[in-house]
Image (cartoon, rainbow, N blue to C red; front, side, top):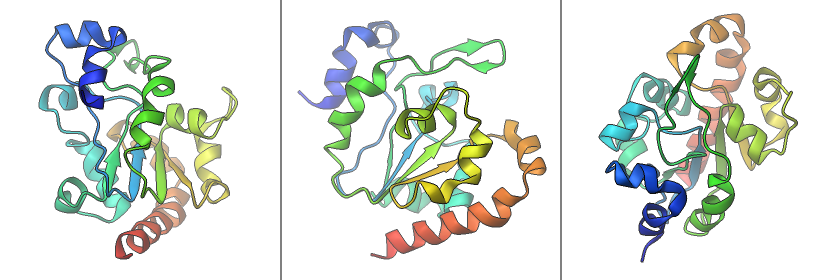
Length: 190
């Protein structure tokens, strides 16, 4: 049985499997860059394609890669904190379920031995992987991204819902994005 099949068969995922949903992630063995985000949105859940929306367009722009490189080069892995769309809450999508990353990330990460940098997209991934306190603000983490290099590169979620955040924090596009593009280009050239 594969990891994918094991995730489908996991009792924690029974509700989603019974709905005919598949776990959304990508773990190419040769991947050099890993993107860890929150959880798939409903569009990704129904299409089975991660980051194939406006957020994905902005993400690829921040990375300095096109769709072909992102989806077909095998250089990018995508591992959300939860494999399934968690549902809608009062102010957006619900948080990823607890325990999913604990159980499955170590197993999947073993399948990608060539990861050179992990992009942490949003607060859930950042707090989990950087072992940060619950009350730390994403802005603070992203502003000090260089503290976490070369292993991790934290960024704000590229959702259009964050356009106001981006307009209030011009340093992100001025300082963070060029550094991210340079790191990605350097890794992909190796």
